[in-house]
Image (cartoon, rainbow, N blue to C red; front, side, top):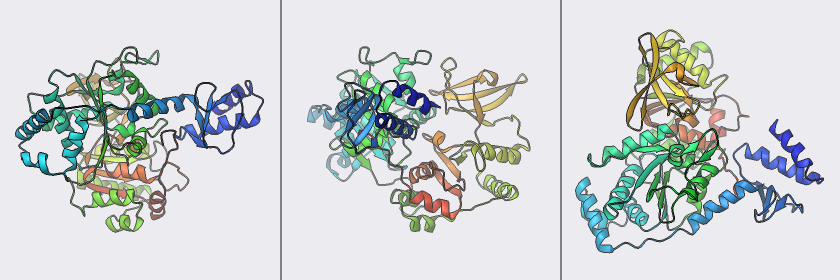
Length: 491
């Protein structure tokens, strides 16, 4: 056990049992995503500092945490708090607005005079700040706004180098496709994962680009920024050249990163002049089921949630088989996904994949067109954890087709080190994707700590057309009453 190894190590450095206990508490909460804990007693020991200059633990006010994460979060906060204002020529800004409006066939007066249009507000504010944060739920126009930002920046800085990136390959592909659908056809953009952007070396656990060898880009745009953990965010900040601009895009109400920290939501709470939250929904009507379920989760409003969704709760194998048959008959499989918060056990991704494969293929074997999801990063093959491919048989061998940076790539299935069927995937793995139809299956376990309102919000916000939930009422009530608030040094 890691905790016991840490206990032994710390006991070799100090005889103070309170310090040992503090370190263990910090480690236990770190494993749940917290980079800090509340600790009211001030301890004096060589292993503890108040400023992160030495030792293993930092105590600042009533917070305590590991020195590494304290210093990383301190650097991230300083970078955003000390971000530079950028002076732009008003006449050139006007020309840039006219160029965007003409190219995208928008009325010019909307950009110049409508102060209620948050998309234009964000576009203009972004040009004036070296750091900018754009948050919004599904359908609020984040992509439309980013396209305006991108076009205006390129008009004002025609020789600038721009990088688009996201935490996962799937999110990077979706980012690239959605942006290119709106950009002029002669100005396509490519997107990459953050690991590719930084030049991550898996064997050495190092990155090519850092403070001493900065990235060559003048503007870096990162989508699905709610998935950023502390360390990757810190590495990005360190790798920016002094004149570079950084734009973070995400949804502050989604799940935080798998690894420790709550960077995006914390930065949204900190930022003032260089932050905009888009609220008006252009995809769904105000009373649409998907929109109202998302709003009720944000507000933790159980009554409204139940008003807009009558969930099912099939229990036996036969009940689940019939309910799954009905759902697949209704939705098809072209743009549909089944989501669960857990990988194994009852109501898990494993169980649901077996169930749907019996319905679709009458077996649990490999099948033509079957979706698979990669579970391990492979830098040699250029496929990463969360990438989804589809199987096809060629010369009696199975291959998986992947869309990588806009190009189709076929990889022998035997060469992929770690994959699973992907009719059902975890809610965490679904981040960065959208589907027409989503089925969410929630385990009937009140003790499951991951059942939070942000988890269910993330799952529901993957849907474009329909949402179906299998759950008991008591689990829904528990989720609506549980909001995951990670404790960090950023807040």
